[in-house]
Image (cartoon, rainbow, N blue to C red):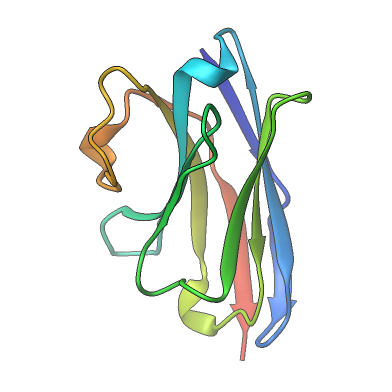
Length: 126
């Protein structure tokens, strides 16, 4: 299982970014993919997840109505569209995967996921 996150960068508050997570080495429909973030000095927290088999999604309260997760099954890629960004969204963002057989419904805790990609840094300036 390989996950490759990209798309981070520097953006002003109120701006937008789209992160991508390219997945390989497994059957895409069999997994749930999640986005997590970790700010300096803070614990890793769940942002959003999607089941590519049925399109079901979950969001952390802190990003609801601002972030949108989507799946392109033809490209084995998950996107995280981030709008109305705030300085507190600054973090390293990671994508992670878990076999949906083991997935805990609505799970957005790091321990819910087995495979992790490298992170991509998002910096939101005020």
